[in-house]
Amino acid sequence: MNSVSMLEALFSVKYDEIKPFLVPKEKVDKHLAVPKGRTVNVWVVIEGLSELLIRHEGADDVTEFEVNGITVPGILNTKFQAVARRQMLRTLYAFKERNTDKMKELYELAKKYGISTAETLKDWTCYLTPGARSQAKKSEEVMKGGYCMTCPNCMIYGYVAGEGGVYNVKSRVEGDVYFGLCPSKLCVVKRTFNAVDDVTKTTIMESGETGALFTLSLIEPGTIFVGKLALRDLSPAELLLVLHSIAKVDRIGGRVTHFGRIKVHIPVITFDYFEMGSGYELAKALVGDKKVGMEEAINKITEMAKGRVIVQKRNLGDELRGLGTEELDEITYEAWKDVLTFKASIESLIFGR
Ligand SMILES: [Zn+2]
Image (cartoon, rainbow, N blue to C red; front, side, top):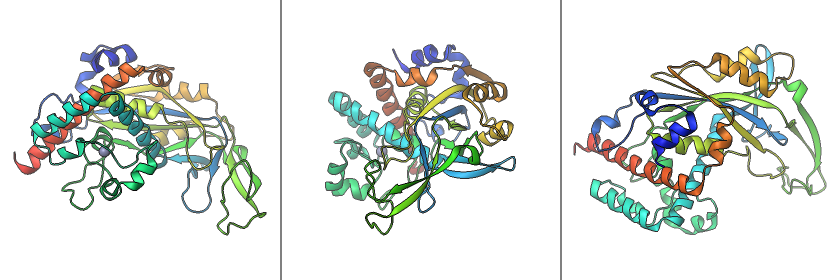
């Protein structure tokens, strides 16, 4: 089954209905390099499964915002997106492992297109190498080069070219904040731990002194967060690969295994020529002095989500997580070809080829 048939099956729509809001990438064309603004609006509900950590110093995994004059916890999209990127890289590495022949074909295609970074496909690796972190550390090239500047992850989520890179690519996945639907005073608790706590196995204390006590603010399990992502100018395969990476995000804050487990629900997706609605508008409609549950949140999203085509599917997240190896390989292979066509199109525009 190709990506188009998979989209039709997952969304219960005819491809012709959603095609105007996607950008298929069939052949190299410098017009492909110009943003079209075609938008897939993805409404996301994040369910906290374990306690989520609010860090008060340094990098915040979860932070706090004010909505309707009420302080609520929130998850920054930069945090969420970092995990989604890692999930996508995992999919790409798994594909590489299973499909040596197809990776060779992609390398040949990149060379045929004359893509400036074609040689990186000879033995492809990219910035974050999940499950191969130690190898990445050993490899000068990976450390120095950072992003490969060629793969679906780089071409969809964007990259900033390091030394030697000629141009940056902007992310086609945009989001801001996932707002907690519960006043902090009702769902954030302070707990005191020992610095050598068996559960956390980490020295969160900067001093690292043993036996010292420290306090963390934790968001109670069951807290619901809502937000929205705008996906721009994606091909059918790129869309599926991004949605899969979003659905697969299962934690926020990776250092301590005990905290941060989440589940992502994608109850509504809308297609349009613009970004429609925002997580903040939704939060404003929902945040009050009581804790809001999943049903109420999803009902409100269904009520507020606007677009020329609206797909409502409660279990879309589960279905995306449940995609089989064969389906994922098909999506990944198509997405690889699409981003190579996209990159060749950008270079055709920039270098006047
Ligand atoms: Zn890459």
